[in-house]
Image (cartoon, rainbow, N blue to C red):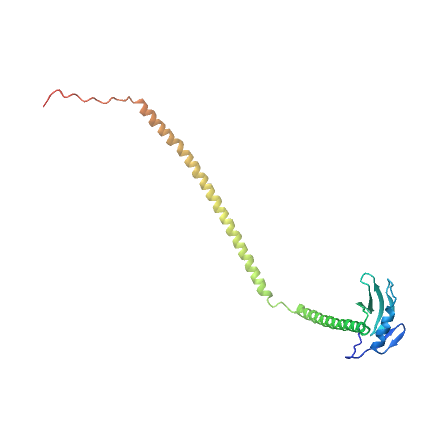
Amino acid sequence: MILIPTAKKDEFMPMMISAKTYETKKEAGLALLLSMKGFKGKESVEIGAYRGFTMHLSYDSFHNEHNITLKGNISHTVPLGRDVSGNLTRIDNLLEMMSKRLDMAKQKLEDLQKQQASSEIEKDKPFVQEQELKDKSEQLAQLDAELSLSGSDEEKTEEKADELGEEKSEIMSEKKPSMLETLKKNVENMKSKPISEPKKKKDREEVL
């Protein structure tokens, strides 16, 4: 567990730089600026300790600035400026933010542990609605079976209707040729009979 020593308001906790301990904020700030002076190394260098963390100084050539990395179980980096007290304020703010994050993480862990304990208790409890679920599952299975049977009956009815339709078509196809033959016979009979000329009316021979 990470323990970050907390400081009271306007209270400065001692800072060690280059094996020397500084009791005031101003002295520590000046010593920090002196350690930055002329330092352009690519690799970080341990320069001291503060509030339970070791301090490592590094230089960022791209942004042309120095950084302080506080190392414990995890590392946190903060950029440095040219102000004596400003750098110490930045470091303190970073540590305070780390402390708040730690408290939030601890609270979240406690909540998860409580949820896990509740889940273990609920796991061992019998399922109250187990019988109701079983009954509804059986009803659903029965309904599904009835629908399946109903579907089979409908298919059989459709097949029977198709068969009757085919028989009707066959009967109709058998009737049609007989009707045609009848018409043909009637036409032939009409042709075979002689056509009689209409009788001319007699002229009137007598005058009334």
